[in-house]
Amino acid sequence: MENYQKIINSIYSNLKNVTDTGKVADYIPELGNISPDNFGVNITTIDKKSFGVGDFNKKFSIQSISKILTLTLAYQLEGETLWKRVDVEPSGNPFNSLLQLEADLGIPRNPFINAGAIVVCDVLISHLQNPKDEFLAFCREISNNNELKYNEKVAQSEKKTGYRNIAMCNFIKSFGNIKNDIEDVLDFYFYTCSLEMTCQELSQIFLFLANDDFITQRGKRVLTMSQAKRINAILLTCGFYDESGEFAFRVGLPGKSGVGGGIVAIHPDEFCITVWSPKLNKKGNSYKGMLFLEQFTTATASSIF
Ligand code: GLU
Image (cartoon, rainbow, N blue to C red):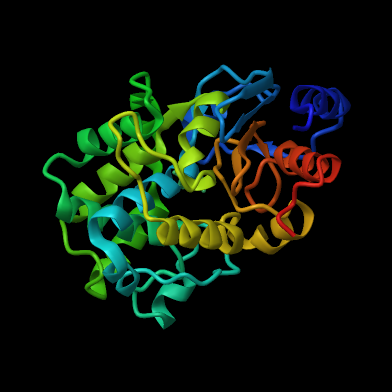
């Protein structure tokens, strides 16, 4: 096995003092209060060995990375009919764009842009009695980690300022692709985005996408092999907003970013890696996170290509 600790330490110290041209997301006011200097990395292998450097044990707002978790639970509950409500094509547009919804009659391009995740939240509300509690219980079960929590302040902060998401949810409802009450769907969506995790917790929770034989502590599979393969495929093509091609080009792994500055990337059959650095590039992806992962897959020859 590669000496992951040595490799991540060395890339970390190369990048620590590199000038970061990114900006912390402050359109959600509470996220603007995070220190831009946080920088953490953690890798967990499928045999559960974990290697971390920097701020890998500090909690942060995972934001859109939660879209993988909502999709996973919805896919588990709804099966293939889910794809009638949300497509699997890259959008080539910003994460919060309303543009394509008009032409696509309210069917979001994929589950990893806001429009798609809002529809996925609607699907979950139709299946669950108590969506916030049951979704949190699902996340705790697949990661075997009862420490996971929503951040109330972040959820409320986004609720107060989530104008585009509110517009989007109403717009999709006008096409009939939101079945539940708008207020309930948005409240659930904002809470899922406010989930907090450390880099280490994040690299552990996604092992089910890296390991075909993954079962939870209670002996259950999370997804079938085919479903996990499909989620990885959508992550590769759609996980980085309108920079998904660039991420595949530079890093070459399925992955997902969030505006809290986290990125998680998955190497099927080997590991999950998470990088957190809050300053974002113009496309909304962590500036240093992209750099780190590019150097990491180069140093370890671990792009999937
Ligand atoms: N909660 C954020 C929003 O809806 C998530 C965006 C992201 O991380 O891409 O704007």
